[in-house]
Length: 312
Image 1: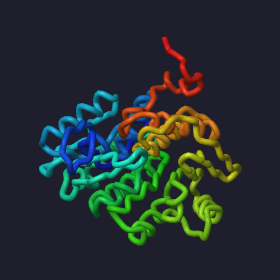
Image 2: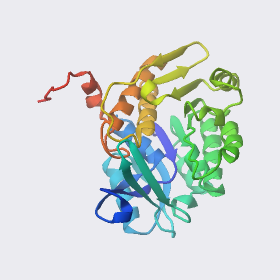
Image 3: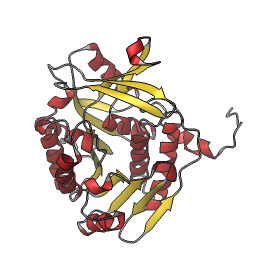
Image 4: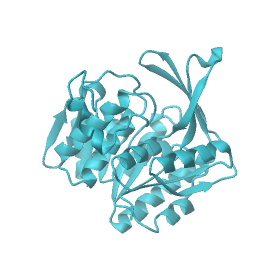
């Protein structure tokens, strides 16, 4: 019985050292919102299974090898005839990253309900889903809905990270889908500008109240450099961001989610979950890569050390 099961598309990632149109070198890795969360949780010592599909190519083998090396269960990753998707990152300005996706017709977009049903042979404690997978096509969207049905039937908690990708679908298309799914989740996580896609209401307060009234136990709002807030039926708590020098903000939200779910799995109260989430998010922005900067459990306290400390 895994702690967490998550599903989605994981792609090969090319990180250019300069402007792509000028040529030059690039580093190859893997990327994908749900896979980032899976790695973050595995580094914190939790059992995670990733459900997805990769192509019959070397990029697919890279993905399997990387996730396996990070301790993520890959038994539910299927090989599909379609090629593995690719994402290209270019840091155009300091703090500004340009992203190009090559995912149309990819293996990850072939995710289907049967993939999920097979994975639920051992139901998890938590199912983690995101709006990214919902936007990949009808097959992946049906797989997400089936996963939610199976999770609720098994008594597993459902965590939804809104994670809206405007290049995959418009707000008008996303809102009814995300709102319907958010009402079935136990935990809803969104940035402050995404919350309107998951709940009815004219402002943040009314949207949070709407979700709590529908049965959502916790609403977590990410505020970037301003920290984050958790809302429950009994309390509202805001914590500031950890002071770090931001190097690369890609993947910070996924690291935040991994920290929050880790705290939940460890039985921490909402304040403790939020504090861990903010810490893991800070680690992510302090290093390069989607998931490479995610901390291990032993490293969580390193942000409390003064500058100039040598850990020997």
